[in-house]
Image 1 (cartoon, one colour):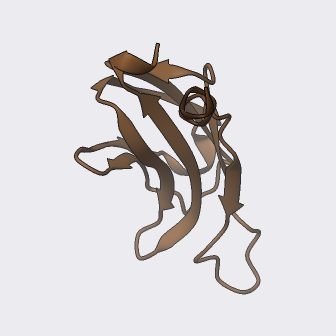
Image 2 (tube, rainbow, N blue to C red):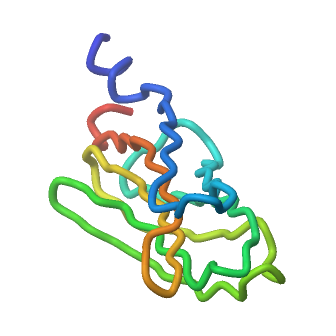
Length: 125
């Protein structure tokens, strides 16, 4: 029973802002997941909220696991860009993952958010 509770743990989000030059508004990046429980092979739909800013050039979204790494990169069009962006990672095998969203400028990382993701194996259903 304890393994089942651990496998279906609700994730905690850590909002981290980095790389913002002094005198500029802090860039806010937030990861939003659709659903809280994932069983392999997991299809995880990720929504990332990014505050539009003239310096934003791209958004990189990663799922970094023990035996699998997936990433997707989207071009951002500065201040005219929409706030919400969606990415789907399919067929994630069981394991622990760190979801990471980074907003990149021309020369630096403008903001980053990370969240833990747990995908349980078929035996944990």
